[in-house]
Image (cartoon, rainbow, N blue to C red):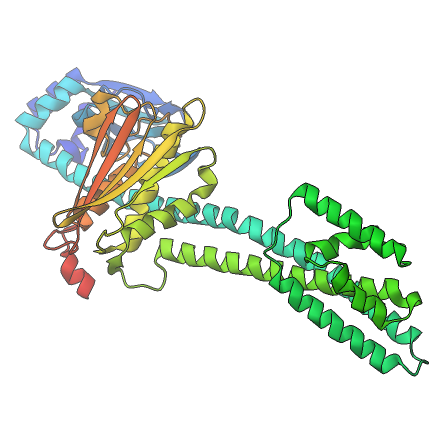
Length: 488
C-alpha cells in the first residue's frame, strides 16, 4: 500500500501541502506490474497518470515490425501525461524491467490538480516539453533511417536488372572470346605451310572488319518473329549447300547482325573449302563478341544513369540550400520508389514552365517520399490497380505540388490529427506515425510553406505550397533563422 511518506519523496508533489497530498493519496490507487509484464500497450486507452514508486519501466514503440526504445522510467518518474491531455490512447508500450510498483492518479483528479497546483502543472509541462524534444529527435533520426532504407531498397532494385544483364553478357563474352581464339589458332595452324597464308588471312580479317562495320550500321533493323525465322532457315540452307554442316546453327548470329548471303560470300572465297566452317565460326564469334560488348556498355550506362538519379534524389555533394527543380525531384523520387509501384498507374501532370525553388533539396525529397509512400499504401488496399496523380503548378510566388490517390480516403474525424506526431491511421506496427509530422515540419517550419490534406472516399489529395524564393523570414521548428543558417 502506498504511504504518505513515499509520495512526499516524489519531486512531482513538492509544492503540495500535507493536506492536499493526503487528499491525492486517498483518491489514487496502487498497481504492481511483475517483471516482464506489460503496463499499457500502444493503442490502448489511458485513464490515469502513472507515478513510479519502485522498479523500472521501459517504454518502446512498434515501428515497421520492430520495437524502438523511447525511454526507461525509474522511481520518481511519471508518465502518460501526453495522451491524457491530448485525449489519445497510449502512444507507446510500457514493459516492467523489474517488479514495478506505481501510484495511479485518475484522469479527473489529474486535470483538477493541473488547475489548482501551479508547481504540479509547471513540472508536468516542463517534462512534457523535454519529452516532445526527445520524441522529435527520435522521429527525425527514424525518418532519416527510413529515407536511407528507401534509397537503399530503390537502388538495389534498380541496379539488379542491369547488373544481372552485364554479368550474363560478360559470361557469354568470355565464351565468344574463347571461340574466337581457338578458331583463329586453327585457321593459322591449318594454313601455316601454305604460300598463300598471309594474303588469305589478311583478306579474311579485312572482310571480318567490313562485316562488323556493316552489322553496327544495321543494328537498329528489327525483324518480326516469322521473318527472322525465314531468314535464318534460308541462310542456314545456303551455308549447308556450300559444305558448312553447322550452317543452321550459326545462321541466327548472322541474321541478328543483319547479314545476308552477299555479305558472307567473300569469306568463303577468301579461304579454301576445308576452312569454310572455321572461318564462319570465327566471324560468328567476332559478331557475338561485338554485340556482347555493346550489351555490357549499355548496362554500364544504365547503372551510371541510376546512380546519377540516386545522387539527384539524395542531393549528394551539394550545399544544403540550392535551386531545386521540383518536377525533376518528383521523378527522382518515383525512380527510387519504382520497386513499390508495380501495378500502380502513375499520372504526371507537370507544369513545364515551373520555376525552380530555393530549398533544402534532400528534405523536400523526404516529403515527396513520405507522401508517395502513403499514397502507395492507400491504393494497395484496392482491388485491381490503383492510380496516383502528381500535379505541379505555380500560384503567384509559390509552387504547388499535389499528390493524389484514389484509395479509400482518410476518415473525416482524423483530418485534424493527421499531422500529429505518432498519429497513424494504419494498423499498429504498419506505420510510424512520423512521416506526415516530419513532412509538416519540413514544409512549414523549414521552408515557410503550407501543407494540408483534402480527402473523401475515392480521393485523397495532399497539397504542398512552397515559396519560390525560399524560406524567407520563416524559422525552423527549433527557432533557428533559416537564412542565417543557409548562409553560414
